[in-house]
Length: 243
Image 1 (cartoon, helix red, strand yellow):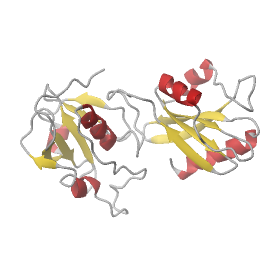
Image 2 (cartoon, one colour):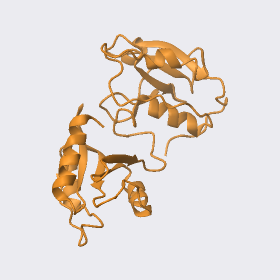
Image 3 (cartoon, rainbow, N blue to C red):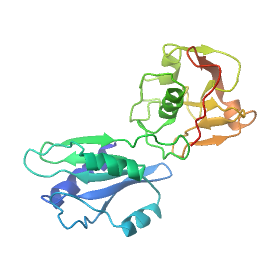
């Protein structure tokens, strides 16, 4: 969550207190912004409701990547309730909860988010997040080294794919289904990765775009591939991953 959006959420929560505030983080291209919406619940100090019209209006301007609400009140903490988790799962979108009294913010993620058509959220739903989740479906657990800033830009020292692929248990190989290809896209660092599908295409999640499958055997992403690797514990037979 960037500082500008977090500041907007904090301001909205304080303005609405003791009512619960609510809103969306909407992404249009690479730009993200916080969109406050009315809380229409009949008991707004304890709950929140976002009317369907507000969802439609927000979706008309971009992709909803977070649903936000606050937990106001003395001593309140951003601890998700069972209802929060249920509704988060129903929405299929990450939920953010902010408690102004303690100035704390947490996020909860829907269970079993499909690998395709995910909105891009740096540090959460990004290319390494997709790689991790695909491998988890195959029974392989990878470490989470995601960060919520553009680490591939020159002002940052990080070089996450270059530094971590071998540590994570990947071995260099020839391209085949189940292999991970690491690419260098508009950067001086290895900054993007995807999985070769059973059909020889590329499952990946490019910055600012929904996750998708695109051609790979020739063209843009093949030309930018720096290395092809396969995890040492990946089974020979790939389990179905499409929902």
